[in-house]
Length: 424
Length: 175
Image (cartoon, chains in turn brown, orange):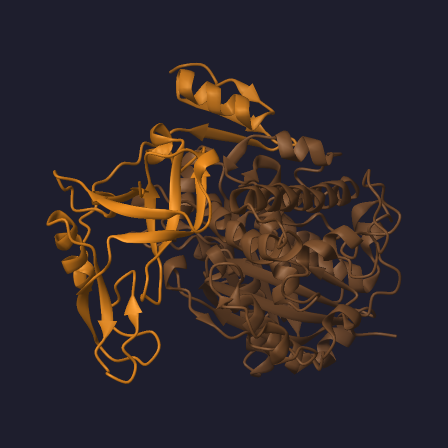
């Protein structure tokens, strides 16, 4: 599987012969799924890279994003001139609910897992509070009956999350690498199986098998290998407590375009937002010189393991203000122009998010996911989506700069990397 | 020797065949064939609660214990105990938590990790306690999805036959 991705990558850069690769960073998330410890050694071997340097990368759901950054660091430090970042996951080896159990072992095994905690449950707890903070206390602030107000807020939140699911599934109809492209309607999403209230089956990504890789190198070699290089101009990483119950109620770390006054009464992050995502965004934006992310990014491939976390992440990454995520969807900002979603999207194309279809529609083979985003972003910036997808629909017009965002369970670790077109 | 295992192009069918005969061949879109067998995998782990142990011993006595930062200037109180303060890094001491609190957030799980599937549907809630700076994740019993809301008053119940697990405590709606 990894070999297939590797061969495809090399095919695109004939000047780059395997002997020019100095080493690798190889990512996979779970030894439980692989049931082969040190599987990265086998990848290194099968790719014919022995005896060059390599290390396995693991950081929960952010494993793939972290792998991209590890390869970036190998180049930036001068340790390597050319570094392969490759990742995979084989999750089909166990049934879905056993897989959920394996993944849930990434949560606290003293306090959380033994309660029947699992990730959809944790994200449901998070979005329930997000809905409370921003819809109950926002749009439905004037409803006096508390229980009725909360019911209305949950219904509204569920409807808007479904718009995100429809977006990603329909974008994926044009991506041959997507494993779950579907022409869904809001109703389909809402009436799909309830997994953990209020999250339904179609608002959640799927466990899958997959592999992806990208090759990073220094500037001189990039120009030698291709006339369409893409430059990594910013990297960021953030973390937070593994247990939701430990998340603090403090202040929002601000992005350049925000003011402390806007969030005076917002206990942050609580369980409604991902402080790690905000932290990663701040670091990556600072390095790339981005001060107005929603204007300065042509697109974002973000970690939509849940439709809820896509909305929460818009806010963390400053694509809109905290509390405006639902409105951002309703206005149509994260949608693509020229795709029929079955409902009006007035501002489609303003800030395209997950043009590829994201995790929800592409699948989430954990160790490959962040690398998959890097590949899609790379092709997007090169303008080669029509060639690789055999379909021009998802190619944005003249994208200059994109962000990829990789996220580990409940936001315990997040990476953000900024990629820019490196040619005229 | 038995015959060659049956070949399938859908993974779901491979799984059914494995249940039936223990072996199958999966043929992928590129025509590559993989021989697939079943490997059972079961183990009992020895699990130590380490510095969290007094919390679980407390549950067995019907006590809900949190921790409080020993540094007087800080004094942060944790609803889920920690041996060291997250704010200032000082060691903490054990304190009894209130047994009544409110729902900070909640969900009803209709599916779960495999070991918990038979218990679905069940409710999970993050509890907030008066005067306590962080939350506690618990099971919420004796109520159904349509009755739950943020802010709901709830109180602790303890298992008279403790299993030394977080499930020795659960919460119910305050009446």
